[in-house]
Image (cartoon, rainbow, N blue to C red; front, side, top):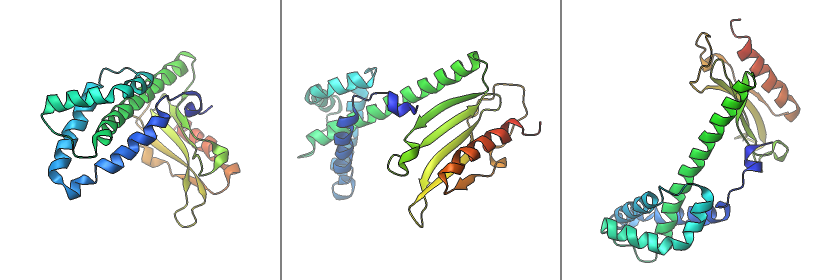
Length: 218
């Protein structure tokens, strides 16, 4: 099951508001550079004040206290909030901390997947999976499977064809830099990308790429 389908994100609704805050605040760089510089300092101070927030659930709960957090940021920096951008300034700070927490969670899940695969004696570990393969471009599918002995990962994803904007099913290889066995270095660039417009061939290409890695110079 894709990881995004099973991991609840209590900030998902708020994130849309926080993203809109960034779209409102950052264009002031071109219209009012001084106000923008002040805003950047305040946003960073808000994000720093949230550094101890341990998870997304707590971050969502802290949004109710955004005014107090922003007031403290103003006192800490000595900066003033641009007119009409109070909510946007706080939202940008929360958005930064949300991205940090999502990255931390993704890394934690990646390590857990790798450790579980090693303990089970497997040579492949799914370290990332999201989207719905059957949805095409509505919820694009992406999966990263790491070959534990070499540290190479097979990345399978659905992308839009730039000329037709229809789904293209791509399988490529990337190096995660985590060799787990006494094997020779393998350059990820040695593997040619596999692309198809046929979703039924997608899984065949994934298997073929995994096989190429397993049998490389064997």
